[in-house]
Image (cartoon, rainbow, N blue to C red; front, top):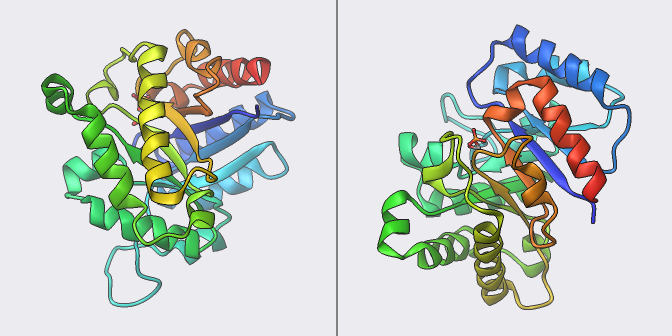
Length: 250
Ligand code: PGA
């Protein structure tokens, strides 16, 4: 199975640094069967696109707004992202849910807007530490999936990539054991099936402190279609090692 590797650069790099990283990655991967997606910050997208031209990388954004046009100061439409060469967009990342108050309902509108703009949404779901400790992880995942996919057709849902990202693990340097992710992926697939029917197969990837040491453990699992990588995607050598791993397990 072709794996998916997504680098989420968050707000970690200047435009100049983003271009340097893109060039280093471009030089390190000639061709790949892995789907490799880089998600720079908005202002870096055009320069990173140019640096990646002709290579094996796809481009993604870290967010979009649900309206297509209008008086929405500071927001960015899916169409504008497509115009810049993006084909993927992260939606509902836990940092946006935590710092900007994104709700499941907002995430639902964004997933829908992404699909309407012909962008592949990377829908992030995951339990907080509190939910984990209370033993309500599965209920939290189920709720997030149900609301995020509300109103979409099964065909649309089949295009979504769901990223399981336990919130308490992101940036901690300590990933969950791969079997833990496999169980959560099963719950996510069940929830998708409840909404879309058994015929729809979504891709489910894992995110949260993935690096070149633990990456193989996730990527080797059939239930894990790939990884969403934050910190480790900021270092070219580290991310290239992950690409190597994804290539060998696929
Ligand atoms: P991390 O971030 O790999 O640094 O934990 C993952 C994410 O937030 O997508």
